[in-house]
Length: 338
Image (cartoon, rainbow, N blue to C red; front, side):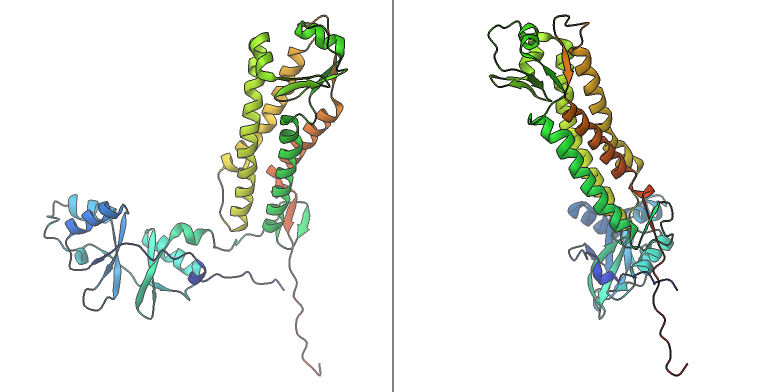
């Protein structure tokens, strides 16, 4: 027997209690002016004497049912053009409120308690609380709540990937390539270096006696090093954006909101592509073809961390292929004496 999915009530939404209202006997012109004044496309229509909620009117109603028909907005009343509807209560199921807005093709629905207007909820607010009617059956590992597990798994993977693949190389804890003392002297055209080996990271080249910003190397060595420096900045920026994109996508999916491809895959994948390009540019810039007098050594730790972080990002992006929902069994009560 499957465990029933939780149905949310409207009271669990964030109710906008400052939404615009207008009396039913007001003119369409007054409604349009109020929409412009408070910068919203919909107004809740209430009866003047009783304060009873009668329905809503939106800008589309005004355009289609008044302006397009050539009626005078100064004399046409709101009650004659509004969308008549029964408001929802705090105890109404979110799925019911959502279906009401879908059926009426409206974006908001009034929320009342004891006949008094509490505010409105939007179709977007409801969408994030709609239970998923199709259990996740794609992934390999069965878990009780796949979306929650995917959120935490992808978030942790993204954070670790950013730290080990982007942040630590950015502060120079490890780099991409090494040059020995002689090679560094030949590369810079500087004598008297005594720092042993020198590591090239995202933003500098450093050894025991030298910490040279990458931008100064770029100014000295030309276009390919300028491209490397710019790419390092882009990796840091897109890495941060990709991190937040993965966390946001996982959280919104946990709430039932479906994200576009650009949020789920494209944005988080950009740092992977840029890191690969960075390694290629560095290898080209330090290659014997451009620098015959130096010998370049790959930073094994830096390469390992780059590969590790790209794998983590890959796992975070395709988290839905790893986990799937399993049937939650509940123990049936056994009647005594059977």
